[in-house]
Image (cartoon, rainbow, N blue to C red; front, side):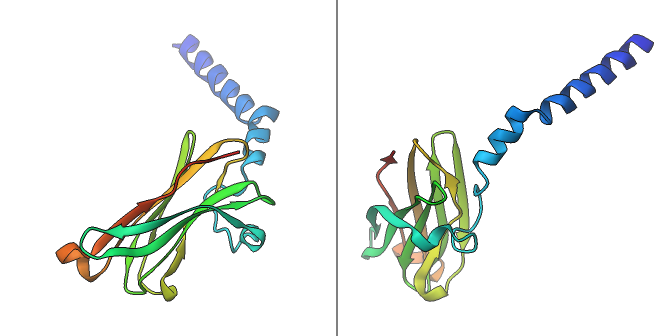
Length: 150
């Protein structure tokens, strides 16, 4: 019984040391903007669209635009859309091995954006779904950007 307690204590100490190691701290420091608002953080101030595509509805044709945004200052990507003010939905951004999804409500003049992901020297892309009037009668749409790698 004493051996099990000692082994557990040693294992817990090893986990604590590993979590506090410089490599783990450095990895966390490289991605300080993950899952944060690009405009509240200041990353959106000098951003540019690197991929743009339509948001289409089978019943209504083009119902908006989706953009994959890039901040060279923060080395992050996020997805922005413009659509009907009455639309709600979901905005996602992806990079190799990670993603972030943001749910938005109607309003804001139809302009919505999701959170950021650090994406320096990797591929990133975005997608969005929108619906209005409960999505009945084909009142929904979706779109996705192409990949941007760099």
